[in-house]
Image 1 (cartoon, rainbow, N blue to C red):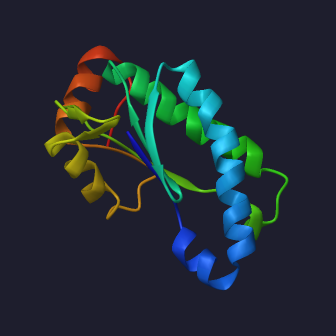
Image 2 (cartoon, helix red, strand yellow; image 1 turned 120 degrees about the horizontal axis):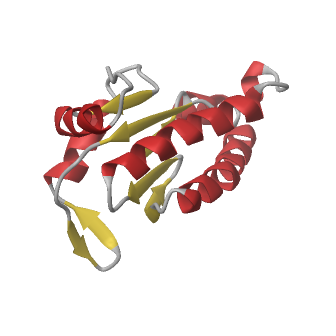
Length: 138
């Protein structure tokens, strides 16, 4: 799973102090959700998280819980102080080295963020999810 704050770079150019405060707030919001769904935080990269799960359904449940948590956080805030996240999920083998992960599964996640969708799945993950849940994934 890879998360990314929508508009973070542009916000940093306009108001660096606010962008850094929102990253700190995002980390406080997301880390308990990751733990609840058995996600292993591999690393953060500025406003992004790279997270590994032992199974796809935990990742999907976590993604929706992240979106719910940030939506609840944002309710009473003015737009410029809201956190909007994109979450990408892909299923595949990874190579672990010195606490980091790499491989095609990780590389494919970066391409998901060309899409404006707030939760996106690559085809292998989408197929796996459809076979195990009654929800539809697009």
